[in-house]
Length: 217
Image (cartoon, rainbow, N blue to C red):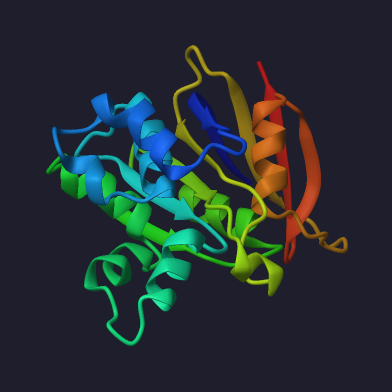
């Protein structure tokens, strides 16, 4: 069995808020002028991580199925004179990189992951197997428009960050992964976000041979 305690949690659910509004709301959370080129997902993930005060010895696991959907749309729309800035901020690990590089902040390990129905299982397993004393598991999505209409973007914008440690003192909850031969069910990232936001207990098979439990204190 793999076990970690959930010691801190930060959630961002901006609904239909657009990039300009998110940038204005969060600009004081970042160095002066830094938000000008940041994506909406980068702003939200960066603010969520900031709530957890990342340390150099921490590991960060980042999970997103689609990443910067709106930014990727902008990059594709910029052809034939492709925008290098939009390209740089549309790559998969961009949201975490924007936040950490802007603050010139080091981190011990960084594991960016993508996927669909079994992304949550892979992200939690990666976090559990890290030797770091504290692992920050973060993720989120950026709502798409015409990419969404083609089935290749998120329908929602949201972000989260949670701290996992081996110390049970003051923990918000306990997460475990145990072997289970039952049939796995898909558990996409938005469902995991909703479970965190609603403080829902979890007990389900989420990956190949893995049962995830989340018990709140």
